[in-house]
Amino acid sequence: MSTKKEPKELAKQFYTVMYRMRRFEEEVFEFYKRGLMPGLAHLYLGEEAVAAGACVALREDDYIGSTHRGHGHLVARGADLDRMMAEILGKKTGYSKGKGGSMHIMDKGILGANGIVGGEIPIATGAAYSAKLRGTEQVTLAFFGDSASNEGTFHESINMAAAWNLPIVYIIENNLFGISVDIRRVTKEHDLYKRAEGYGIPGEAVDGNDVYAVYEAVSRAGPQGRGAHPHRVQDLPLAGPPRGRPRRVPRP
Picture 1 (tube, rainbow, N blue to C red):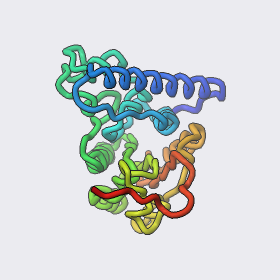
Picture 2: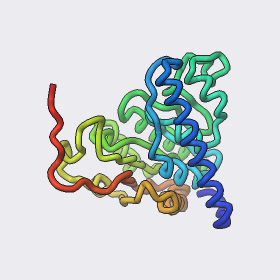
Picture 3: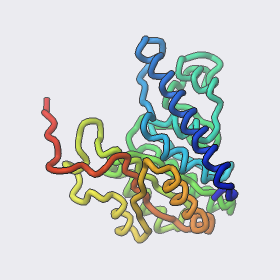
């Protein structure tokens, strides 16, 4: 999607983006532990390769639908870290003057994070529809977790995107658990990318810990996406597939 970069330049950019994400989230966690920030801290630790690989592949004018765990997407897109931290700490110098907090930062084509599981998926789909109507050849990435793929908003949005040939890529940041529930306990088909087949668009699994694999997968989506075709559902596992029977979680 973006201009092709030299290998050394690309490697440096990946390292810089992932390092900034990790250090930013570590500082947020410290403020949270010390009770210096309002609200909750939904950290992006351990998922850096997904945001780095995907966002580096984008054009400056592309869109992103982010999640409640969206700091990494913002950092990867080059948002102002000082304004981000100020917003998280409730200061007037933040993006929303300290009134939005961690989950309501918008910049660099990011359509805000979302405190509702799966809430960003239809918003991102709407942005893709807007780009198609305006003929801008912009592409939208919709990030969400494995549990959000069980929400009605996912199925309704992907059906509309497929029917109307919208320029969007749906990216499942799959950490295998929805809070404490093993994804295998609530889905029959554990390879979530295969859900794309039912809507007539491609799907693929990509190693979410391999920044190059993510970058290449999203870059491949570019030619199709910019031609106003819905590209694919990408299922990015962030850990190896769980072995054996699903772990039983005690119920209250």
